[in-house]
Amino acid sequence: MSPVENTVIRPIEHHDLDPIVDLNQAALEGVGPLDYESLALLVKKSDQALVLDDGGQIGGFVITLPTGATYDSSRYEWFEDRLEEYVYLDRIVVAETHRRKGVASRLYDAVETDLPVALEVYDTNAPSLEFHRRRGYQKVGELEHAGKRNLMLLKAS
View 1 (cartoon, rainbow, N blue to C red):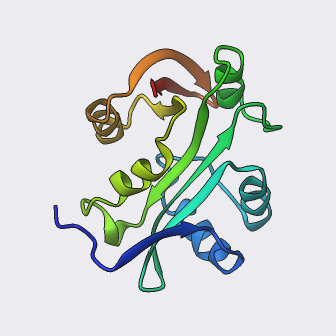
View 2: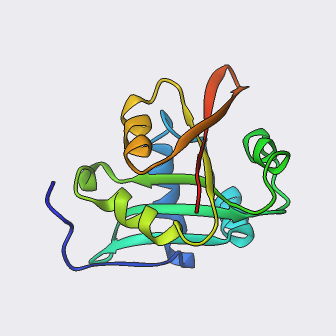
């Protein structure tokens, strides 16, 4: 793994939305679909909405939601029913051109702060499950949604 040099993690800006939608839609094996409007709304509700900017190219993005957000998601609601204070990692996507270069680790480093981080991973996504295990995430439950089994993961602060 060679690190991505000359990159910066910064907040998502308006001009990033179209490329982020494209990135998201190319990664539907691991995340739910997004269009421009739903992404704009998600960013507005977010706690953190960040991109890894590689000389103007988006190498990846991450979006988290705070506790108590108004968000229509059974996975988010699962954590809301069980946790008092946490950050919900709604989605992270790394561009194919930037995989295995430390992008996901840098984005996680940016959002893993003082609060526990909660997220779910499809049970069929072995690389993601291994990545999260190495970062210290623990399985705290399961949830069936849209015909897929989601493993609910938590990393304590």
